[in-house]
Length: 280
Image (cartoon, rainbow, N blue to C red; front, side, top):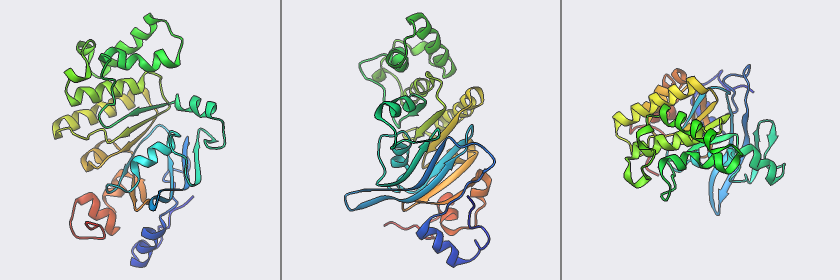
């Protein structure tokens, strides 16, 4: 696939991209385990995804940016098979996940790790048991093996001294780090982050970003981030996709996005009040 790059200095072309989206693969020579093809999704009369196309590059960190309500979190739910599109194709590891059985979808989900906004820890379990949960549910490993794996990941995220604490006893940043450790225990091929920096101050956001980069360097995998934080996107991303009104309107390497002349992309990434994006 190729992007309509030849006339991007033409305002009419910008309007066409805003209204129709783009079909683009920033690295066609690389592998893509997750492909989103013309996906549409509505809830009642509210159109959320309106024809979104996006191929995620394997073993890279891709950040999806866009205004609130434009379908970023809904996109994540489609990728992991929690939402079925009204039309279009969600292809994961070579499978159209809505043309396979529920059992096969469940097996595919085991190859995903997800870090939710607040960590989504079980309040009745301590940190160790929260991180061990996927191993106990989806594998037949002995407790000694589980302990070795869990403690290894808790060490990576700096939580070995908090194993016996409960979610209500730790900070928001510690919850996110525990959620990150849990997302990694099954050695996933794809790790998804739904606003990982939500609720964190700038320093802890930066530290979490460092951790994301460190874990990706050590474990590899395809990382997909959804965020509003521009600094996070610039710091951790190999690729940046910008979504507006349910469509992909920009996709490319990080510096390309931050140097874009497209009015919406420039406005959104700079936080300017002047441009196509208004209060509505």
